[in-house]
Amino acid sequence: MKRRSFILAALFAAALIWIATIGAAFQAIRNFETTPGRAAIAPRAWPTSSRVQRASGWTLVMLIHPHCSCSRASVEELEAVIESVPALRPTVLVYRPSDFPRGWEQTEVVKAASHLQRTRVLIDDDGREARLFGGFTSGQTFLYDRDGKLRFSGGITSLRGHAGINRGRTGVIDLIRSRSARATHPVFGCAITSTTAKETK
Amino acid sequence: MNGNERVAARAVSLRDLQVSERRKKVDKMFAMLLAIQYVAGIVAAFVVSPYAWAGKERVLHIHVLIAVLAGAGIVVLPILLAFFEPGKAVTRHVIAASQMLMSALLIHLTGGRIETHFHVFGSLAFLAFYLDWKVLLTATTVVAADHFARGILWPESVYGIANPEWWRFLEHAGWVAFEDVFLVWMCLMSLREIDASSTRQAEVEELQEQEQLKTAALEMALAELQATA
Image 1 (cartoon, rainbow over the protein chains, first blue to last red):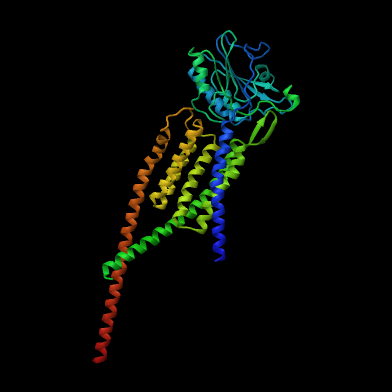
Image 2 (cartoon, each protein chain N blue to C red; image 1 turned 60 degrees about the vertical axis):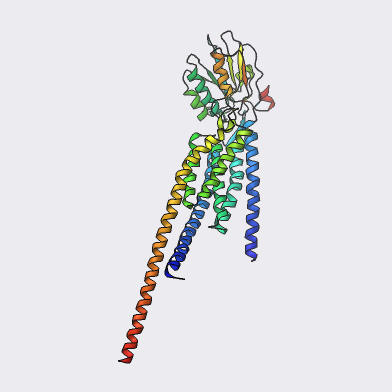
């Protein structure tokens, strides 16, 4: 009888944990997925001191933290943009701290970016280029027109780590196809640079 | 109680015993499966997204915490029920709901990979081992409720677009229902086969019993004849 009561109490406690877990996990996942990273403060015109070569037509630049798992989705979305716009030659800037060993940046995300058609992958030591473009978050995408004017600044995924059609991706494609004048979309991903004073200078 | 009534009662008893034993075994199977999935979820989190980064700094990724804590929360009740209340309806319904929640968790931990969605359909097939169509209904309801709630609160997570039609969750649940139709049919057909085999066994037992009674009566008559001779 005593054992039975103990079992029932344990099952009741487990039922409460079960219900609480479902609610808490649902909320935690929602908060994580829907909270965007810090939006870029991008210069309106092409940063001339950048070592990224500006194309004669549209120029797309994406910032990537190589260890940000959410950025896989950004690279997948970039692939979709490239397939939709054959003339585009994007540049992916991969963050790497200069005091970290070489090869640290060679992750699946970067390999996936390297395999994209017509895409240049450049190492961005200590996030210098990211600072020139005013970006803070992995997956941040900038689109400049032929005159070097910023036309899109934002992310091209719908949520953190979620690939699939979204307003960021369609915004970039529509801009290039001259269907709109300017677009923006929240960016979802890890922070490109540390919060330490040395690196944020 | 005449012979036919005895056969019918025995057939029901045999059927219930067979189905109950089967469901207890399936409960244990799911307890093992849920435990394995729990570990697999943690491994997936460590492989896919072990850390969240901010420049050179890294912290344990929230996916790992969710895999460990939410995974444990999901599996603890069904595993306890499988061991302490095996064969009961509440056990298999909680297991069905938990299995679908594990699907949702694994889909999330693998970054929404379309391949992980196959887990839902595989799980439904496993749940059909119970031969209880109501369990499939519970599982389908959990899938539909998950899609409905997320469709309202953050639709991009399920449909990839911000403004899907209100009925879009029905389309997704519809694919699950598509599989359900055949699994329910299989459950009912299997139960009918168990019914038939139980009835046959009850009839054989009844015949054996009647034969034994006849043999006993004959032996008694023979013994009486031998005694009077």
